[in-house]
Image (tube, rainbow over all chains, first blue to last red; front, side, top):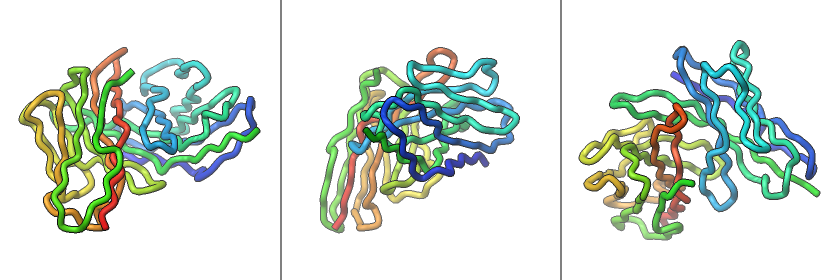
Length: 117
Length: 114
């Protein structure tokens, strides 16, 4: 079974600073995908970034980048130039194939990020 | 941008009532999912669908049921709500793009059963 571990229940960062949110994973499947989602207090889940297990380069999307270290089974999210609006819960998730061609996401427990002035 | 909608956003209801949580998407996605999330916790898959007339149970056992009569619509029903059903319910749909299949989520329904 797949497992996602996020060891930081809460993180604080000052505005305009960079922050790294940790995520480690465990899977026996050679083909997998890793996702990061942001969940503001309003409750919706916002897709941020994706990294495939065979991707040669680390994924980047604007201020978000994914520090993918396959040998260590880690997929940390880096947010550069933090903004007050980045304050939210962040979930790391792993894609697992399910019968019929769909994908299930296994989620970590999340990291609550607070951006301060 | 994902166009996936859930209603109601918030629901407070008494024990024993039948409720239906609505989920619809306008993207033509074949696959749809329901997740349950307790406050401050991770999401757990409770139901999914590959397409019309297809429904499957997820990892987390749930007393809810789902139906998929139309591609765009994936409602979740609780025949008799109980306080243990209090949670947030998130609907998602997925399609393949840029070589990956990304799940896009609706805004969620926060359910409180008294």
